[in-house]
Image (cartoon, rainbow, N blue to C red; front, side, top):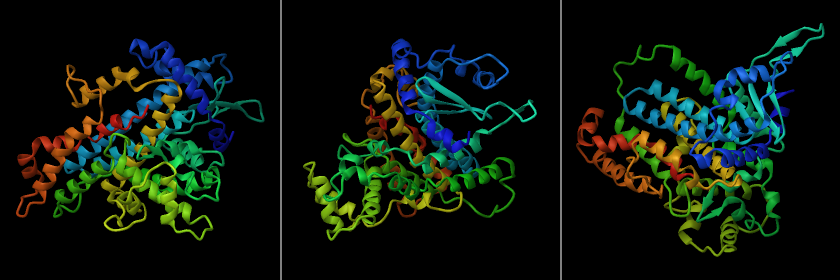
Amino acid sequence: MRLAEYVKKASKDAVVDGVKLLLRYNIHSNRLISKSNPLVKNGLKAIDSHGDLRIPYAIPQAKINQFLAASSLSHMLDGWMYLSNAFSALLNGDEGTAIHLGYYAELRSAMSILSTEGIAAFSDKHIGAFSPTTNSVYPLNYFKTGTGGYVRTKSPTHIFVWDAMEKWSKSSTKPSDDILKIFKVQGLNFYDITEYFHPATVGSTLMTVVTIKEWLKEWCFDIKHYKTDRQNRNDVSYRPQRILNFSENLNFQDIINDLSRFWNVISPTKTDQFDLLDKYLLRKLFEKLYSQINTVETIDDLITNAFGQHGIYDKTLFDFMTFKQPFADDHIIFTHANLRRTTALSIIARATLLLRISVGMVSQLYKAGGVKKSDLNFIWNNYSVDNGFWTPATPLADFDILWSNVEPMLEELKIDLNTQGSDNSIYSIRERKPVEIIHLTQINRACLWGLDF
């Protein structure tokens, strides 16, 4: 089976079924998944045997569905952790390691997305659910040749993940318009907002697969660029990094200012998990949709109507959506993400944008399976204690506090950095603002406030 067909057949319904099974058998006992699940215990061996035509062994479908559900969440959490460590590496003056870790943040977010879609990526073999009751290994570990013998095939993780993501983005049926429902502005998801963008057009027709694919590419989720990132990552991983340019030093003032702006664009409000970022994305969507319709109406009127149908009349918001001053410029995260070469900040920007999709799709999945965020407090508490977000005795119920706690520190750091005459070597910055620098690296706080179920 070709990969495009394999990706097309993958079933989200099977993963929702897996979430329901996790809730029934594990979550209420403070476990995400059973240790006895063959894909947890020895996944590579289990898949190898499952796909071997010569061995009468099959992984139970329910175990596959549960693993897909659990791994979507786990990969998402790991992806944000890699991103945090990429921040740390860059602030330690190690651009090469920041690129390496940023790449793995991208990879894990992609693996999380694929898991929500019904595909579990392993080493050189992978498994996908085609429905709540059917599945298949990719590629088949063994298949018969014309001479009656068996040939073993392989599909390495990195190549498989990016190729599967490419097929996902190019599929005539995927991604579905559900992707528009993970983004919110003033508490409304993009699907509901764009329904009234053009009165003469049925809302669903605006949400075509073509538009979604174009939209994804605008965010720099062009898989060809990810393949380039992979090649550059190999240079970072295996080639000597400190062999040239010893006369050059990093500009930590610029780096910290840019990283601080990455924080600000993914900050939450009471109604929206990623308030400012989603506003930027919505105006990109409006701009794209407007270019695809024939109308004598202005885009200003269409935007006013889109929100007005939901009782929202906010001139500042409308000025933002129509690029009026002081909102004319794009955010720097997109500037870095659009770079056609791999730098530490460009790959961190791309990873951040892709992780925003990952946390949204995982939230959507668990909500569909009937899980409430509080059902998984045992996961959030463990993750947060290990990452230093809170102590075991003081867990937070409102994850927005994870932003409000760090926001004033980032502001203090910004003021300090940009005070005329400041010594902005990383040594001096750490001497003046040691706690603030630590908090600057904890970008993975966002995976908790980004949860929406």
